[in-house]
Image (cartoon, rainbow, N blue to C red; front, side):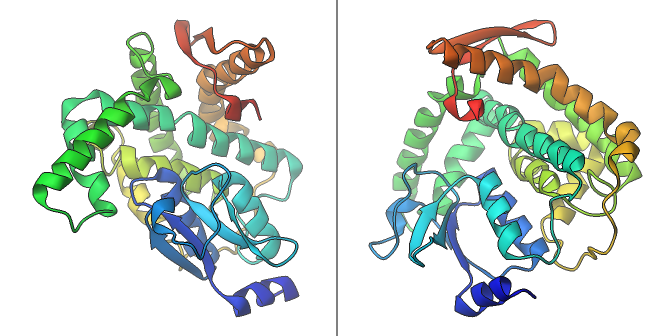
Length: 315
């Protein structure tokens, strides 16, 4: 244990807020369990944080409360840089490969999961009647379970209306729906084959990419009825894998990372899929931002794609 790791552990557990229906909250919970980092998790959003905790500049979940250079707690969001920060403070059981090429591939797959796989997650949840009913009845109750049945239904209906209105943010519309659904099915089939040959993306030990993929699957495979049924039918190993990754605190982290030459065969299908659907979107989105446009169009997998510009993905 390093001095910095010991100091953080002695002070207090890592404090953060989130909700079970947030895939990024689930990503960080599973990550912290695997890393064996002590944490204090509070269910709820910023409205429940009270006056004792700072508010983030951008209100997203999960929100972590971490010390700044002056030792004062500050509210930070965005799971990917938070993981990089925790990897520097807690050195045991790392999830980032040390080889620069492997680290880049891991980063790319993590970003694909965070920013592309969330499209089918949001799409299925707010496009299909059974999924809308499930989400609107359950998701608000994770935060406000003590209300009357009438109040819960009113809250759920308002929540669903707001989320459905935001489908354009992830690019889900009549034009893109077939492409999103086809990409989800392809991912399930190729990832099912991958984990039938090895337990994690890079072989015998989990990386941050695994936790990012797992996070979207907690909703796609395990919560929302339509994509869950598809997963169980097409990729039962993926369905089961999601439960396993939920808590890897007892999993051994002794296996070495594979070298970059050895992953060409195992990750070819996954990387080809990322190049097929996600990279064209990233390029078109960045070009639209540079040109000052509010929407962009491009061709993904031979099909027309149209959505609102998303500034975050330009990073």
